[in-house]
Amino acid sequence: MEPVGARLGRETFARLRSEPLRLFDVGARGGSAERWRIIEPYVELVGFEPDPEECERLNREAGERERYIPCALGAARARVPFHVAAWPVASSIYPPDPAFIAGFADGDLLRTVETREIETAMLDRICEEHDAWPDLLKLDVEGAELDVLRGGERAAQGALAIDIEVAFAPLRIRAPLSFRRLTPTYMGWASRLPGCAESSGASQSAMSSARC
Image (tube, rainbow, N blue to C red; front, side, top):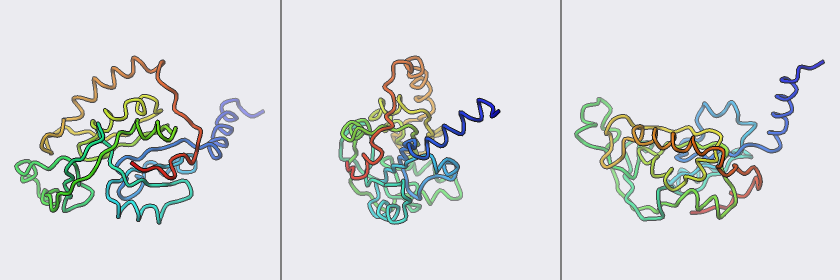
């Protein structure tokens, strides 16, 4: 007789192939991180990337369950400066601190080569408009992670797991040291988890035509 645990695991993964978890990848330049690919057969990926050219490239190369939205997320809907770095991966709405990066051999990669204006949107508002909420949430937006969470508190509270880049050092001007601020935030959320809105598994293609 098959052990109960093995049977439940097999049934769960079989179901996830037809009803995948929804992964929101915020800051999707370069595509999904290697650490997420182990569960690729069981997730539908929705990426948010502010660079329209990179977003177009990602969509050209996307798999069947991947789509990328040319959108920057933040604490509110607003027009903000976007500092394009010499190494595009390091571009951010927060400029690097020249005095801080000067102490690193590769600090020049973070210098701003262009500043353009972009519009940010709130994650919760996008989820509400399309009735699609993340089961998994990944944030890597070069210092603006706390801003994204402030504009997506409901989405974050309903997620099963959050993969987030945090800052321990003042790399960027005016950017919060997110580790210090996120710790009490998560502790507060944890106490309210039983009452959180459930992450929706419906409408698998609801985000396919989403825009900010």
